[in-house]
Image (cartoon, rainbow, N blue to C red; front, top):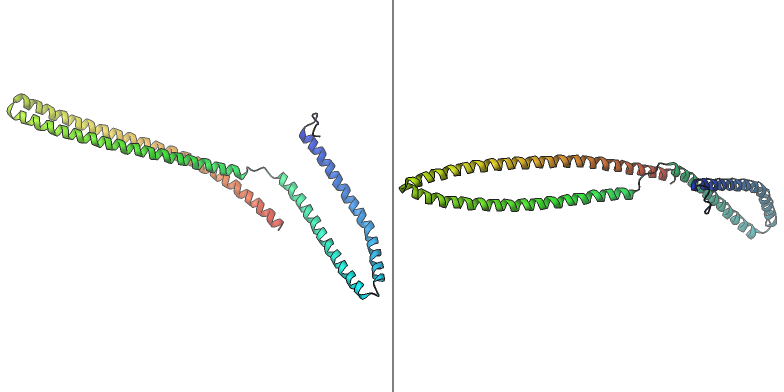
Length: 239
């Protein structure tokens, strides 16, 4: 069969299985014939032993112990035969059971999810760090601008007291400052709204992703529970 390239492996396997089953039936039939032939011989042997050791008390006691041992041996052999039959039946039932994914695949999936979660945590920490650095830089720039404007305001205000052109320049400076403050406020508001929208989109994507992962994990958990129930049932049937 190993070198047969004319037939498929399944065909060869079925042929081999049929031969094994035929041999097993043949062995069972021969065992039945042997039991029928063995029983009269054992009865005859027992009667001869009883008549031989009837007048020898010590030998008779040993004979009784020997028979007890033989009886125990028969019980053990019977139990072994019963267990072998149960093992064959369970093996056949196991082959008929649907093939479930191995637990290794579940472990690998959990590892993959944990790895992705760690990657996301690292990305979040990096983004938070960059955000803090940008916030510090923005605060520093705003402080410099405020200091620069205060110095410029003081200089132009002094000139405005003694020069009409200086007063006009001071009014323009004040107007520009107000316009800049409005533009800056609107820019900050727009940026805040944009960040909130981005965060909400990320949250929605994360929620969708988590829901898919939860469904996947629930399916894996149900498969594991089903597998455990099958194992517990087999253990209960064969304590």
